[in-house]
Image 1 (cartoon, one colour):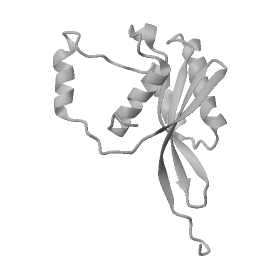
Image 2 (cartoon, rainbow, N blue to C red; image 1 turned 30 degrees about the vertical axis):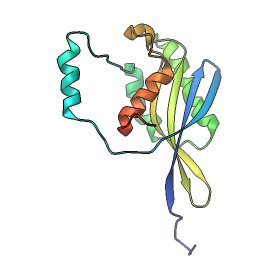
Image 3 (spheres, helix red, strand yellow; image 1 turned 45 degrees about the vertical axis):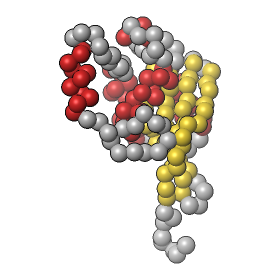
Length: 157
C-alpha cells in the first residue's frame, strides 16, 4: 500500500463463544451474519400483555455485570486466551457475588484486516442465572447466546 495509508478492514462472519467453569474452559466457533434489527413494537406488546399471566420470561444479568459491561466492551481481544480469561472471570465473579453458579460465557465478533491480522469485540456475556431467576434453562452460555441474538437482531448467529 501507499505510505501513510491504513489497510481497509472487514468483519468476518464468525463469533467465538467461550464458556468458563472456574478454571476450566471450552471455546468453539459459531457463524453469523449481521442482519437488520427486526424488533417490532408488536413483539413488545405481546410480552407486556402476557407478562401478568405468566406467559413471558425475563432474562437479566446481575447488577455487577451490567456495571462492568462498558469496561469489558471497551477492550480489544486479540487472543483466545484473552477471551477465555473473560469467561473464566465472569464465572468466578458470579460465585463471589453470590449471583449464580460457577459458569460464565462471552460471545465475540472477530474482525479481519486485509493484512491477515485480526481482533475481536465483545457482543455479549452471560453467566449462570438458574437459581436466582428460577429458570433451569438459564445456563451461562444460553444467557450469552440469547442476549447476543437480541443485540444483533436475529435468531441466527
